[in-house]
Length: 167
Ligand SMILES: CC(C)(COP(=O)(O)OP(=O)(O)OC[C@H]1O[C@@H](n2cnc3c(N)ncnc32)[C@H](O)[C@@H]1OP(=O)(O)O)[C@@H](O)C(=O)NCCC(=O)NCCS
Image 1 (cartoon, rainbow, N blue to C red):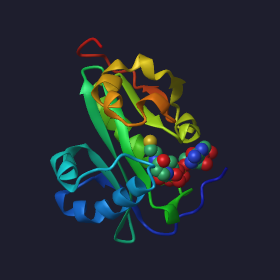
Image 2: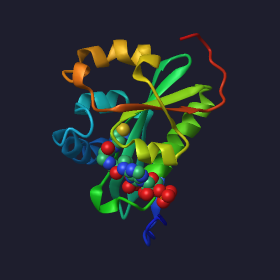
Image 3: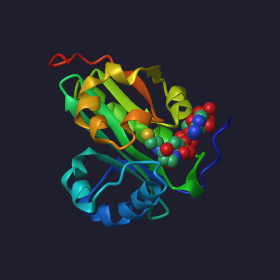
């Protein structure tokens, strides 16, 4: 489907500390709907270097983070776009910016756990099995209340980078 046309200036950029209070409402809204895991404000401040935001009309309308798990693996997480701005290609631009970061860091594999697999497949990710991501499973999934009834699928993207350490 052709992306909707955006008539406002859209900026995709690394997040700043001053963005955090403007990021939290969208993160909290989606966490309440259980679309993403809850993020504490302190956690967002502490991980600010990991975040990319989309700003339009002076408002934060989307964001996402790249979390490095190991020398060969990073995760796209907390990817959200304001519902009023869905379909304008903003999610794609945020993920592209995160993949550029992953490539610059030489992380060869980027994954996401998601219920929106169709979106990630459009962006060049492919389906995989969660069991192939043991670092994620052991770090987070085993502590998740939905561990035995997980409704997310795993998707991976290969940046072509060289791993600095084995899995
Ligand atoms: C998933 C999400 C980030 C997509 O953001 P968006 O800005 O609306 O997406 P884009 O406009 O960049 O879409 C890029 C492409 O993916 C497609 N797409 C978007 N959502 C899709 C979905 N759920 N299933 C299949 N395709 C989808 C678009 O049609 C577009 O395709 P095109 O290139 O052929 O035009 C947004 O729907 C969202 O915030 N969802 C709720 C939070 C969430 O589930 N986040 C993911 C957590 S891992």
